[in-house]
Image 1 (cartoon, rainbow, N blue to C red):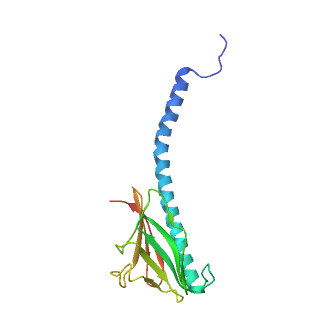
Image 2 (cartoon, one colour; image 1 turned 90 degrees about the horizontal axis):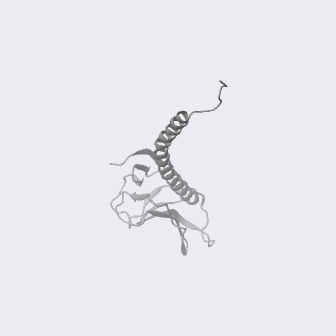
Image 3 (tube, rainbow, N blue to C red; image 1 turned 30 degrees about the vertical axis):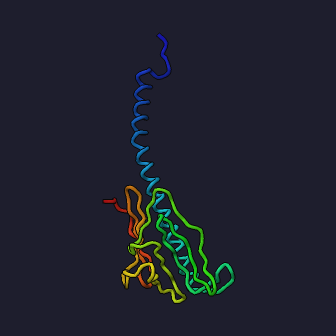
Length: 169
């Protein structure tokens, strides 16, 4: 009897079953990874804009209208978004609002808008009108999705400390 080359139907079904099981395991993990990556990217963008505000304030970058700037900062809005702002001599500048769906942005001020400003000395100070209770405490920004929290702490010297994502309660 001649030898047949190929696979039996049982071998093919077992292979398809194993591939199906592996796919069922991989898809939820990929979705979780994707959500965590979106949260980290949003946090990285926020850190970039905080640093941009600090650098603009320290180097005396002029406002887009050409007037000298007094302060630069970030305005945290109630709809989980933020915008780069500048106080200029004779005018104010507000950049485009940045937000990401399904990510909540909150601060420890408790009021919105919460404004965080930097002056030419690089010293950070919360705007007393938007954050009167903060005093000398650390300004904290919490970014969260349905599973993780990402916390940024900004001290009075302007240093930004990142807390790695942790499970939400």
